[in-house]
Amino acid sequence: MEEDGPRLTTSLELLRWIGWAQMMAGQDWVRERDLSREQSFVLGYLVQNPGAIQRDIADVSRTSAASVSSLLQGLERRGLIDRRTEGGNERSKRVYATLEGAELIEGFDAAMAATEDAILAPLSAEERETLHELLLKVTSVLPRPTR
Amino acid sequence: MEEDGPRLTTSLELLRWIGWAQMMAGQDWVRERDLSREQSFVLGYLVQNPGAIQRDIADVSRTSAASVSSLLQGLERRGLIDRRTEGGNERSKRVYATLEGAELIEGFDAAMAATEDAILAPLSAEERETLHELLLKVTSVLPRPTR
DNA sequence: ATCTAATAGTTAGATGTCTAACTGTCAACC
DNA sequence: GGTTGACAGTTAGACATCTAACTATTAGAT
View 1 (cartoon, each protein chain N blue to C red):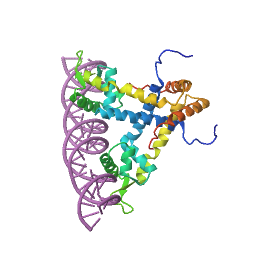
View 2: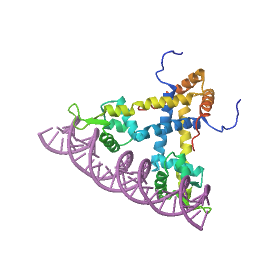
View 3: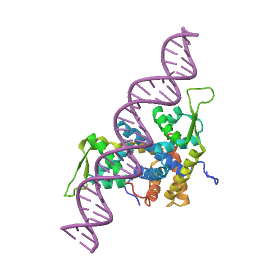
View 4: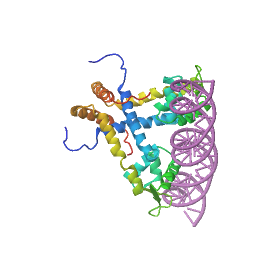
């Protein structure tokens, strides 16, 4: 049931394939809400980390403070976030998702879970278990995602 | 070695995690070449599919003909692609990556393969084989990526 | 206390991407 | 062969993002 020659499709490609399917599904989801990928990432991060300062947001989104500033202006204009200085520190701004912002992004994780459940549909329970263990091994040495 | 309760980290999340790591690695790579994600996708597609018309490019990139038009203008200005009408059809334009464009995107697949090899490092040969079979099952029912 | 360097954030201008409205070309049908 | 509708692509204008240069605040050194 196996071959010795080079594979026609490597695991690497299959992983990218799955990632691609997830990415495309996510893209549809955020576009329906008039959010860019970056905006939805930041909004989700703010729900998980209320009161984060812009510097941190820039770090976890792997971008610059200037880009975060512009991005937050867009979200603030739509009333999806609040910014205020707190605790006597005048140069840091604490950023919060508003109720409206939190509700807008709310279904994101659920939508992704549904997508991924559909993706795993061809596997039996035992196979899913095996896959899970292998993935755990792989991710154990991977830098953690920031949300 | 197993639990019955809900998982702390689902396979779904692990898959997304791996996809995230790949995406971030790709992001670094394209940014070093002053390409956007969309541009690098299209440029890579053109290397694989020389002479594609803009309508097809729009379809596979899941965007509009207008966006493709703008995007190609940017690539053309940098001399990374050529556009010309061929075969007596005046309304379709055949698009080709130039030598320079092909060279710019050339290392992309290799860079991704290197990243993903690093990702799979924690697995033994047998484990990789098992993972590969499971991933094949999963992807067998997934819409194929367009490059 | 004052100077300096690091830090947090903003603004200006360039480029990229998107939507809506447009031009030009082809094909089908009478 | 002329009209109509579908099709391929572009343009204009709005918004998002990025880089570089900037302002303002804080912390540390002396």
